Image 1 (tube, rainbow, N blue to C red):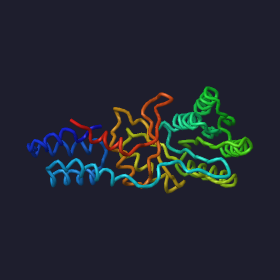
Image 2: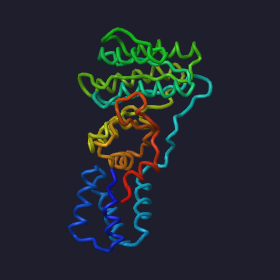
Image 3: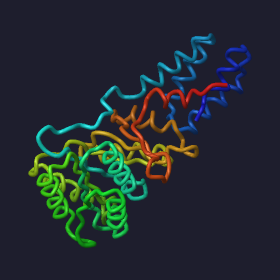
Image 4: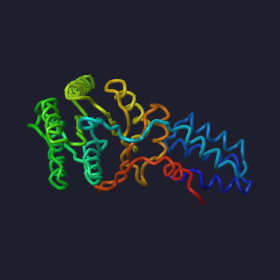
Length: 280
């Protein structure tokens, strides 16, 4: 993802050509930073061809990211409830499993609701993870009522004094309106049980600008509070994190970088920006 290392070397050497600027601009666009931010970064680079350009670029990148908290919200007198949403294929259920494991390793007591009842594989996947790491997974029948599963899971989380209740949800129904209606129904069940503390949207980094559209739709419908960005490995277009945060104003709270159970971590702004800038 080191988009700027070559241009910094040229700037220090004082030998930047028009072709070099075109190459950099194309690289920024291809990295999914978006046209507006790419233009802004090129302008900054051209205006300060000194040793200060890296600092200026770093500042511009940081300014494009939200200053909202990246910490998980915490309830004080009941289980903290996390609703995980997103379209199919983004790694949503896998992200639920990884979050389950991360919280469990941190000593937290977790209950998971397998409320994507429209995919038998999603239910089975979470049950397998739950058995492996010792986290209870509340599931219902394939194609059963998701809200019923959530109700049972919320009651179990309360009865067992869990620290967290994580709810996996469907990513596709017959129409978009059906999906959003189902998510709203689940939210109402959780509100009656005490409330929803986080609505985390899972976005596939390799979908680029389409991820921005997804963030907009889900935020309008279910009040997303943060993002989980998946597939942020070497093949991902890393600039999409900047583009999504700049457009949505939502904080990325976690990133997934691979298929392994531990390929999941809180999003670190300094590490991310350093990865984009790189070094020669």
